[in-house]
Amino acid sequence: MGIVIGIDVGISTTKIVGLRDGRVVSPIRITAADQVTSLYGAFGKYLHDNKISLQDVEQVMLTGVGAAYIDDPVYGIPTKKVDEFIADGLGARFESGLDKAIVVSMGTGTSFVQCNGNDIRHIGGIGIGGGTLQGLARVMLNTRDYKQIQSLAMKGDIRNINLRIGDISTHPLPGLPMEATASLFSKAQYNACQEDIALGIIVMVLQTIGSAAILSSLNSGIKDFVLIGNLTLVPQCKDIYPMLEKLYNVHFHIPKYSEFCTAIGAALSHKH
Image (cartoon, rainbow, N blue to C red; front, top):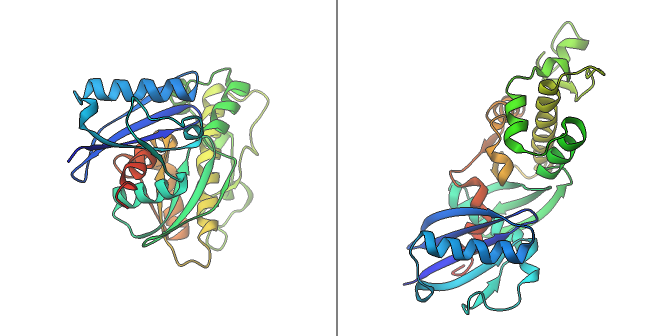
């Protein structure tokens, strides 16, 4: 039995994984100037790094917005295209072990996919994600480098940026503790330091995504959310989502290969 290759060709990065005997093999990520270069570069590097010959590849499964640019076999190997939302659902379900959940795909923007057993459907999305974070950082901090933004944010104090319930009330409001956010960026001043601004941007993006995900689940009975995509690697996820869990009595899950779930789902769809 050969290896099935799943490739997620995104706006800014291409992710590639192999699936052999139900196991994920050495996922990698490549950034390039355009989607076609990114795809071929990622595929070549993947085969080389894992000492896989073209004859070992059973099938190539493509997904993501950049897949539309690929119509021919990749290196002579047959390719098939997979709906990105189906790939999100299959990959998140495989990685989390959950049959019933909402998949929150945190890419350049954010999409919500509801999984209920084999019923996988796109239920909406918001135009806030990693692209928002980078765009605001370019304008406000003069950088788009994730590592630099995160490094600044680690030294920031969110109390200088966000208005909290404790700032406007002497007592907790029903269901809202004193540290809950009343208004994002409402306390930011003209002379706010870069560290506080960086943390404010990250918190705003992650908290907005979390709140929108919870609202997307209303009347569904779903309490589990699987976070996938590059933004899951941001360290502040470990602070923000547990806070939302307590506030709304829900569960956020970040699987081991969270940023590769869509590529994993593409590979899985070969036998689905």
